[in-house]
Amino acid sequence: MRYIKHNAIENFNQFSPKEKAKLLVEEMSKAYMLYPEAVANVLDSCNIKYESKHPQDLADAVRKNSDNLKMLNRIIKLSFLVNKDGSDVKPKDNRNVSFREVMRDGKVFLKQYPAELKESTLIARDMMKETIYSKVLDKTMTNYLNMDGQQSKNLRLPSKNYTTMFIVLGLVAIGVIGYYKTRKS
Image 1 (cartoon, rainbow, N blue to C red):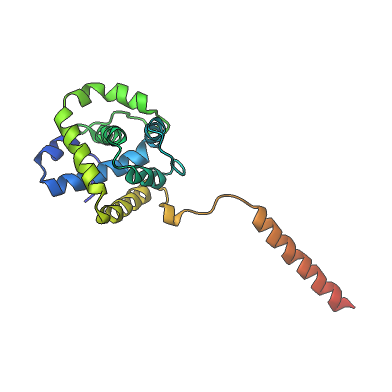
Image 2 (cartoon, rainbow, N blue to C red; image 1 turned 60 degrees about the horizontal axis):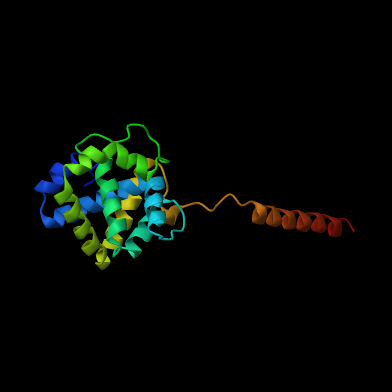
């Protein structure tokens, strides 16, 4: 099930441990997609390297460093701020919002739920150690990226590097010209 817009805290408090883990994967996936700049800020502040700000690259970096509780705690905070109590922290679609801005706007909300945030961080850490987590996260990320109109990393088109294309077209043109010249003689 995709929890697009819901009361994340209320659902978290009512769910079983297994459902909580699934909810966290859903919310973290949305955080990677909606707040890539903020996630990158968290990774930078924790000296964690990542390939790009594409949501799947950010998710991979978080997963590989799941023992870093400082980083994980901040990612969990971002994740809960995607939906908080059913309302968005940032009503406008701004994926370049910084971690600091999101935290400033969600500060009051986060202070109300320290126990849930701590429990979520520990659940996320333990969950990321399981091999099935990667598969669930990849599937969830792909679903959310496709819903958003983005492509998953596996479906990503190559960058717009036209050099190779021009070289191939040039070789084809030379071959065609050479063919016609030899045909005339």
